[in-house]
Image 1 (cartoon, one colour):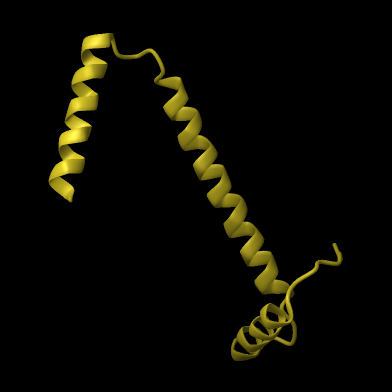
Image 2 (cartoon, helix red, strand yellow):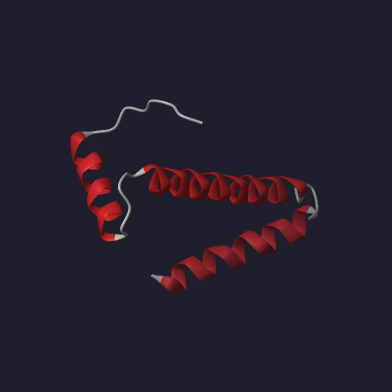
Length: 79
């Protein structure tokens, strides 16, 4: 499907440069790849959020407090 998008001049120049290095005349394939990567990453993130929300209420108060303390300790040790 053909459509029109707005991109900066520098972006267009870079896309044409990359496409040329790949032996392609235009940058449509690059845009398709970028859209596919974006959609896959979005789906992955949405899945992670959904999985995290599904865990809501899975721990009792004591378990949640212990878990939070362990996370805090890991963060302190990391620094």
